[in-house]
Each structure stands twice: as C-alpha cells, then as structure tokens.
Image (cartoon, rainbow, N blue to C red; front, side, top):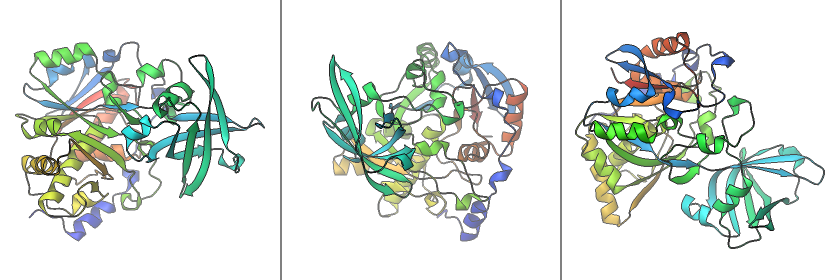
Length: 411
C-alpha cells in the first residue's frame, strides 16, 4: 500500500505560500481577449526546455494517440443587480443551487428556486424582498429575491418570478450578467457573453470560465483530429473560490473551495482506454481527473462516501492502484447502481509533493501570484515554474483569464 505518513502530510501542510509569488505588473494582465482565440501565444515546456509558439501550433506539440480532456462546463450569467427604492444597489452572485440542489433541476426550475449566494452591499439590505423588472416577449415580469439565512459568509437566497413558464436558466439569460474575474477591474461587456465561454461549453453551472479552453477553435480541433489526438469531456462547475486568495502563511491553514463534478461512463472508459499520455485542458480538468482517481480508490478500499473527496484525502488514501483500476471501479459502481452520470464533489488541493495519477501534461493560462493554481503548476513542473513564469514575463506573454496559454509536460 502506498500511503503517506503523517509526518509527510504535515510537511506538505507547512508549505509557505510566500514561496509561490512573483511580480505581476497590472499592464501584463489581459483586460480583453484577442480578436481571434487561436492567435494567442503558447509557451511550451517539454523535456525541461521552454520555447515560444503560437496557439494554432498546439496540435503539432501533442503526440499522436494522446487523449486530451476538456471541461465542458458553461458559465452562467450569475451576477444579478437589484436596486432598492432608495436607489441602493444590491448585487447577488449565485454560487450553487440549494433547492433543487441538482444543477440541471435548478436551471429547469419554474417560478421558484433557492441558491447559495454572495451578496454585495448586504448592510443596505434589511428584510425587504428585492424586485427587478424585466421583459420577456414584450411582457413585463418580475424577479424577486428574498434573504433566507446567513450561512457563514454566503447567503441562502430564494428567487421567485411570476411567469411560471420561464425556467430559472431563461430568467438568468435575461436578467443576469456574466461574472468576469474581479481582477479585470471593468464591467461586463457584450463581447464577454461570447468570449468568456469556450466553444465547446455545454452544461450550465460555472461562475468562472475554464479559461485554458478559451483559446480552442474549430480549426484547432480539426487539426488535432487529423493528427490522431483523442478527445474526452467531463464537467466540473467552476466556483467563485477559484479567485479566492490564500490569506494564510501555510497552505495547511487554507480551506479549499468545493466544486461539483459530473462524468458519464463513456468519458471514464476513454480515460481507461487511453493508449498514450493524458493531457488535461485547464486546472479544472486536472482537479476532476485526479479527484476521480481517488474516488475510485475509495470504492476499491471500501471507504464511505465515494462521491466526496476532502482537501487532504489524496494524501492519505492508498495510491498503489493503477489509473485503469480506479476508473474501472467507478464504471463498475455506476453499472451496478444503474446510474448514467457520476455526480460528485471535490475539495482536493494539489500542491508540491502531490503524485499525479492520471495526467502527464496540462494546457493552462498563467495564474495569479500566491494562488492555489500556482501550487498546482509547481506540483506538476517543480521549481521550473520560476523559469516558466520568468520566460513569459520577459517575452511579453499576457496573463490571467484572457491571457496567453501554455503547454506544460511533466518532466
């Protein structure tokens, strides 16, 4: 059995976030995307060497037979801006559904649903029901928001609307705004409705885009297909916690946010049957793939609640099982339970010292200093992350969500 000792885990938890910072000038943060998605730069880290390419050259950098895994989540228009009769502005940011708790059912809800939300300017919102008018097919309707309960920093908000034929998804399409990252320091614009969404997005639920996928176009996909690269999809709904700064000195004191996973048997079998390397597109795909491995291990080990992976579970479970064994365990479980989708949640933290069980490489953008995403990059490439980020800064790469891309292969 390959299980970490308590001393090893404690040493991981003592990692200092101050060791994972760099100077990021504001002018290097891409405030807007390029006109053409695939015209971004691509930094390639392979065989411990760093070179610059264009993103349209990505297919030539991927070995034949590789399986690339994409997160097909779709960003919802999760920002709702209400105004009280006094003129006070109250902003409600939908995070995840509570009733119904299932994402699909929540978006299909008619007339009423309840969500966990972040509320801006809460002190100006007393007990009254907020009301926003909107037009649907020329008819005025109203979206109402009622504060139900404070849930330790997030809030239970019940939404109601008069037209019972409209789903909550349709209401958000009419009334909501795309929640672009706060560090862009600008309001959402019409172009963000398209550009802060991957071309392959399918399932609503994210409040932030899986930004590594923003560079892909139909022509890039066609070239990947021509070169014999396989594609698989899964779903991880990206939460607002992806922007949560690490405000503690040691990562053991940082509480990772929970994100929700959905995967079908076809995708699991594609991972099982992968004939070559597996490359994740985006850190969210990495979290999903690695979490699924450990959930399979929980099934193989007879552990309770395989649907949930805690922050440090990956460092305490038996890692001696193969990728094939772990993923097959989930497939067998789904067939036994007669379920078509494996719905789960993960709080995994991937930090230096983590042993990757599924991926050999990653397509990703450049991340914020002192972020858990930078910890993940370091876990993959080691101290080479310093050279990679120095190269990007010295060669005018654009950073963060709308910035340039990189292909990072495990040394």
